[in-house]
Image 1 (cartoon, helix red, strand yellow):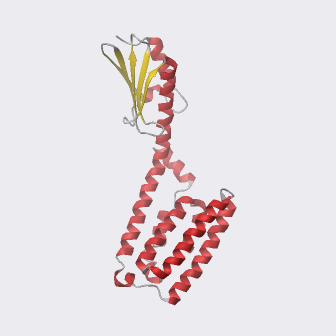
Image 2 (cartoon, rainbow, N blue to C red):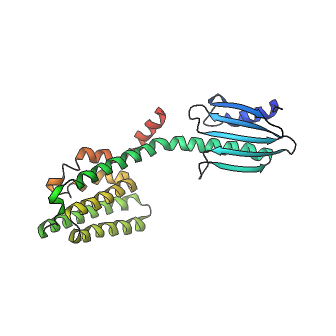
Image 3 (cartoon, one colour):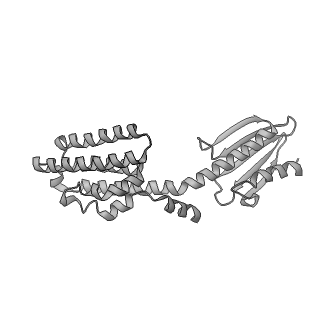
Length: 250
């Protein structure tokens, strides 16, 4: 048993879409007693695969493909002919989306490693890290937090998106840092601060670029070498231009 040239042409037309050419794929068929299995693999990332099961006597189709829209693997059964072709289209869209997001995912993993490195260094502060902030140190940090909060607040207002929600979240996070000054050791406060700084950077990358240097000024002098400006620059998310460049190089 084999598929008709007409049906294979319909599949080829689906593959020759907006982002791909049919030559980007390896296509083969396998014949069984009651059905023909169609296997389509994206040649450059073969984990992205579409499997079709075409039942010769019932004119029905099943599909299995990776990636899905939500789950990695999707199963669709009892499809009509047109629904089967639509499933191929869905798979192609998902494949393109996964490829587009891969550079950004790598950036996130890189940032996670940098944050982990920061925290390992903070853990190695030694005896000084086990001390609490003095009254003077706490007051100085509280004043700097007030300034940082104002800078971040102005950045949120300029964004003009979800203003109240973002402002409430910001005020809550900075208030937590203020309260932590009284109850956490220097080491643990710095760990708490590093997590919130990382969250601000991920949530509002463009705004955080403008205040990242000031954020480092919150740190005690003997800790600034731990969170160097170079390390801070590495943690800042890539600009849209950098991400686009990475995508083109994939």
